[in-house]
Length: 86
Image (cartoon, rainbow, N blue to C red; front, side):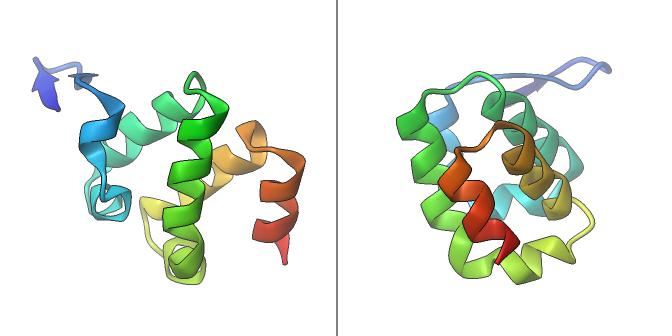
């Protein structure tokens, strides 16, 4: 993944961002993942979801991680949304 110019556009393969949780520590990584969650396949969302669920509470309180979780409420499956809400 590379940053392109001052507009912080990301280029790169979504698969290369795993382990995904480490990306939340940085504003640009969080934005990259948020953007990708809008367009990735169901299988890719499942991969990300399965990785973040064990750490969901700490991500909810993370300044950048909370926005990724919010994207799951917008773009996740009904099951994923229910699990996050619990």
